[in-house]
Length: 281
Image (cartoon, rainbow, N blue to C red; front, top):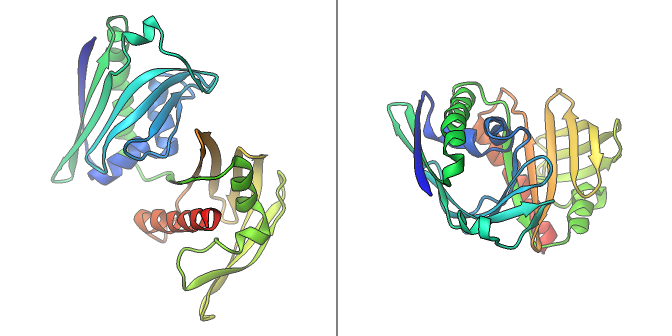
């Protein structure tokens, strides 16, 4: 086992670089330098499992051993995954089980340096020496460009079937689809089929503000995935993943240009947090 190190300087604040690394579509973009179609399943909390997967559902079972937002992320790799299932440790996986992959960010006058260290078995050294610089260049391009997508997520202690039902059925949507206690969702219509529409009325409880949030479904895979476009044309993807006894709900959406990225991230996350409270009450 050998520890390889890589570094890149990016003209962006460390907060934006952090999300360029770990937001859903950003991660899929830069890790395509290693494997086209790469993605992860995790709640991204310190101490949690994380599955690093290919499009076929094969990959690595790992753990997030350190997460300091906007500063450091450390993974410990444990074993193989085949067809989304953790595999027993074999003689081959013993050669790298326990290896670490670390990302550290530091910012100085708007220039963020990303330092990466990764434990690699001998036969993959040349591969990583070639692929990692390409991957970090992709991170740099993402971070130095306008934000193209934002990711929010929550973890639910429930079944996949219950999470799907309470996320999609109007009689449940009206109970959680608002970001703060002074707002509510007095009306919800949802025609859950590809090509059909939904309408959610969002309103301040004092009657001062009211609007309809509408969109059209582009893809509906029950208990797994929703893709829709909002009335203004922006795309939203919602994924439902099962990990152990939990369900991870991930929303990835294109931002609008009137409000800050941070405000939009906070607002969408607050609604998902409301959803979690409703499901687990």
